[in-house]
Picture 1: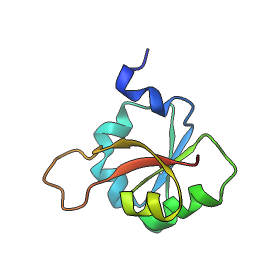
Picture 2 (picture 1 turned 180 degrees about the vertical axis):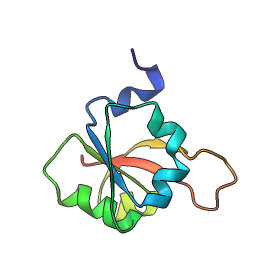
Picture 3 (picture 1 turned 30 degrees about the vertical axis):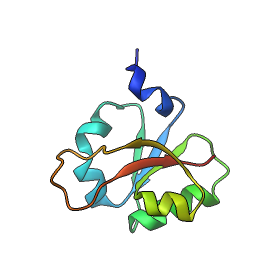
Length: 95
């Protein structure tokens, strides 16, 4: 069973992001071995991909700024491996 704090990620089948963000969030992603991880050119493209998709099982690792820009819902914040990363990453989804 999933942990209560991860209930908001239920139903996510694929996460898209830039390869560096994926690497920096690898410990978080390892908790979801059933979720496909797809590399895209950058985290802004990842957020735009979600915004333009009709899929409800697709999420992105991107910034809060991108979530606001594209009207996306933040599912989980601070998913990076270490707190001293310069960039903070979050997982966002449509709706």
